[in-house]
Every structure is written in structure tokens, then in C-alpha cells.
Length: 310
Ligand code: ASP
Image: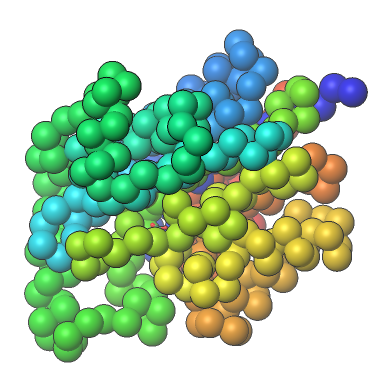
């Protein structure tokens, strides 16, 4: 049986200032194009999601790779996960600070190790032995990231010790994590997510992105990549809930809507999420104001967040 190839990507949820919509759009479209070229050449969903996410890691506006948000101490700590749902191969990184492209480094872990996740300096030491490019931390920091941290620290001072993110989702502005899900002609589903985490986080904090079944998930039926405040996505176990609702409703769209609604009601959590299935369609949805996304299908179907307002 041959499947219609599809690729769906996101570049974060939250509130995107109007004046930046075009730039986010450009980054998303370029990443979609990059991933789609790989999909056409390889017919491999894992390679396609890696290529799209890597392109977004290199684009300074997204909160992943170059452009990652900073911890409250002004450092970069990135998380990533990539999953081949056809055979449950999983690779991910937690809290790395010198990896130029965490998603490709995660794929090295997926391919070479019996483990799924490596963290921090030990992860970087291992990656170096595999020829993965490590870079000085400063080269991953943009002026925009510095400005955002400064602003955050000023606001934090005037709003108390810690701004509980879910109580005021708009204050954090855009979350900006990147991700991709894809289905290839052989029916293989893959998912990839990469992030700098949340702005002003404590060093050592781990979000939902590298946690299988919460912010990133794939198996032989569905692939999911989420964005939003990680603590809330973990509390609700978002990807698993979407899988559950798909089994109930047989529709990616209906299931995603139900899960986002329930997440809001149960844990006061807001998110954006992309979902690809083998048999029940796909969806790109959010409970935040905006979600940057773009998709392409072999049958000519294509779309993105600026062309179609849902
Ligand atoms: N989910 C990410 C985290 O909590 C943040 C984001 O989506 O931008 O680490």
C-alpha cells in the first residue's frame, strides 16, 4: 500500500506581534520547502522532519538552535527529541548549550545508541566523538534573545519572585519552539521538536519537548509535536491525550480540539500542536492566539498560518 506523503511543521505558539508575522512566515515556508525536498528525494519521513526542524534551528527568529531563549542566568539550554514511529526509534537531548543543531544531534543518538536521551555536558562529550558540530554558546545567542531576557528580568522584579506563566500566558509572549510531523509513502510517521525552552527558566529546568508522549510523540498511527508552556503540557500529557481522543473520534481535527479544550479546563494550559495520522487526517491547532505552521501534501494540498486563518 502506498500513502500520500505529507509534511506539517510549526514554529511556535503564543502571541506574535503583527510586524513579525511576515518574518515568521518566511522562516516557516523555507523550512517546509527544505523538508519537502528531502521528502521527495528520500521518501523518508524521519529525514524530512529532521531537515525542516534543522532549517528552523538556523533561522534566528525561532526559539531553537540559533535564537534560543535564555535562562535567567543568561545561558542557553536546549532540549530536542526525534522519533521514528514506524519502529519506535527515539533520540533526544536535554539541556545542551553548545550543539549547533540539536535535532540532527538527536538523530545521531537515535541511530547509534541503545539509549533514548542524553543530557548536558556528557551528551556533548559523546556527540563530539561522533563528529557532531559543537559551537561556542555565544554564537547561538541573538541580540533579540538578550533584549527579551533583559525585559523579562525587569518585569519579573516588578511582578514578584516568579511569574507563574499559565496565570498570564500573554506576558511571556511567543513561546517559539519548532517542530515537524510527517507521513511518507511507506506509511511511516515521524515527529521532531526542538526548543530553547521558556524564557527566564531556571538553569536545569526540563520542558515537555524531549519527554516522549507529552510534547513529542510518534508511533505507527500518529505523530505529534507541541509548543506552549512545557509544565502544562507535561501535566496534561498532551500527545497521549490526543492519541486517546483519536481512538475515540477517528479524526485528528476533532481529537486535537477536544484535547486542547480539556487542557485549558483541567490545568489552565494553553498550547499549539501539530498532528499527523495515517488514517485520520492531520491538524494544526492552538488555544493560544497564534500558531506558526505550514503544510504540504503530495496531492497538491498546501497551506500555512498566514494564508488560512482558522
Ligand atoms: N514547550 C517548550 C518548553 O516548555 C516551550 C515552547 O513551546 O516554546 O520547553
